[in-house]
Image 1 (cartoon, rainbow, N blue to C red):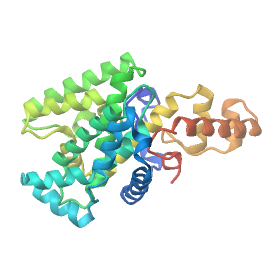
Image 2: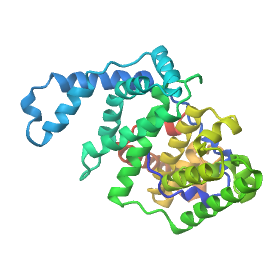
Image 3: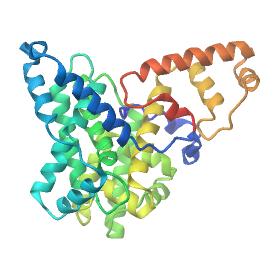
Image 4: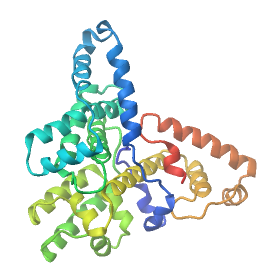
Amino acid sequence: MKTNRQTHHLLNDERSLEDSTDYQIDEVDEVDDVEAEEIDEFERILQKSDDQFRGTDDLLYRYYTEVGRYPLLTAEEEKKYGLLAQKGDREARNILMQSNLRLVVMIARRQQRQGIDLLDLISEGNLGLNHAIEKYEADRNYRFSTYAVWWIRHYISSAIMNQSRTVRVPVHVNKAIARLVRIAKKLAQKLKREPTIKELAKESKLTIYEVMNLLADNEAIFSLDALITQEGDGQDFHHIIPDQENIDVPDYLMKLEKFSVLESLLASLEEKEKAVIVYRFGLNGRRQKTLDETGEKLSLTRDQVRYLQMKTLEKMKKLLKDQAVEMEDLLFE
């Protein structure tokens, strides 16, 4: 998704992140589309001759062939094996894992960057899939595939960031994360339980979405997981948030993923480009502005605003090329 947890620059915007649901981000249930696409992709791969995958790609080809043998599960089967896996059934865990390996491959292929080995990303994605199996609650009303997508992307994106080191988290964001971790630890000790998002927001004098945004940072998530496990009852922070804040798990994760993608996109734009998108699409809790209103704000003519908007949207689409998300999902209802 970043999608990568990058600059978190909105922390310095108008402290209006609590109203950022005005982004009008659609809820996403990618399962059907993802499964249909991955089936088509694997059929194409497996129809190719062995010669096309010899040499350096031989190992990759064998892996494709192997995971392509495992059948996909229906929603009913996911729930059945999910419930068994929750009870410690190893065979059920293996079935969930094997049936979603091709999902990992598809996401890894989409997120691959130059100089990063695809098999390495697949390996990281498999770790994310395994983590999703551990955290999945089969009695909830959502499919495992929907839940697993976020964790797979998260692990792959973390690997890309750690290997490439092309993205640096600003110093002020690192300080904000460290402060939030300290506050969370103190609250856990004081309350004798894990703090909720609202409690963290109140204690840190941040909005709920600012807290969520900080928690979206890869290192912060795992730091908090370790922290809460030490101080609490063994549950991690991702498990706590939905239950105590009445946030639906897939909805929360998908929205957080898209929110981070949008942040990263805006951070990559020039100031005037960013302003046009924010004004024209009503981001940051703002009302959508007309071409004339935007032009007045930026000292541009109506036609200049229209042209800049068009060019900026083209630029954003190019930046999203390798991400498993469509720009329409970020900007439109």
